[in-house]
Length: 382
Image (cartoon, rainbow, N blue to C red):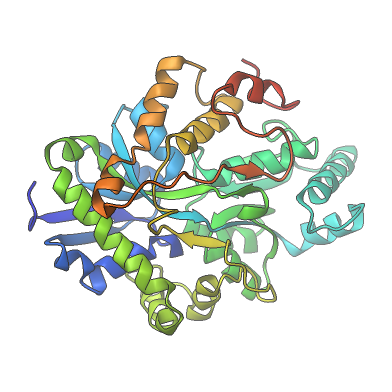
């Protein structure tokens, strides 16, 4: 593949794909000598499969999926490079109005505190068990996703075992709201703008933004098939530069209305423009104040992938039984988040990534993952 050839990229209709949309629509990619074809997908499994067999050259991908794909976890081994963090954070946990009312009644403290809400959830579950009611169901986008890990971490800190006390079900992001409205799930964790859409429709209440659980959490990556990175690194660097220019454009307040309208198009995200506007403003709910950490689009600092980010994601996989602790697998996982292409594209001195911190529990130490895992009372046994 050489510069000037079409690059085919799959994406899921989410706000955190905005830099890819702008790279095409504002011709930042064309200025780098690239012709990009964006393909809208419904599910993450579709993107994974089409990336694996070469139908896509690159993808807007869940950060943990890049590691899982490279390691061949629950699927064929399909090595990719997470060349750039397209977005950090951006998720939220949303619950039905009925569950929210139950949590309010059970809470001992401020429900905005994830520890308080998690313990309230434990109380609600215990009450339901005594009445022989069905377990609560929560939607998440994919097993190898930050959404899954945020739900699990939050629940476990309140004494809820996510593998036995509730049902976790996989739902594509655009279908989350419909399933909550129909009562098929009692809550979900998904990326913007679908939490805001649920709240605007009156079918959901945003309980916690994702950054209240983990911060900063690697959310979406620009995943590129490893074969391409090996024989055409110049293309990878050009794509990174186009996305960085797009990120600069969308962060400018004077461009917010234009970007929101672009995202609202049916061939992009296809959601209500007001919900998308609030997302770009950093508002994760109808009444929430703006927060600059709600959804962070990858720039010259946050866009740089780091091996410790990959190690942290790998540790979440280990905690929940998705992988086995293996020095070689850890080495491979760390290598997925390779900053070499990003550094070459920017020409700037590397800046160390901020450590990922959770609202509770032991701090993560990439040099001693075993001790980190042993600190948790609830986890899948080794």
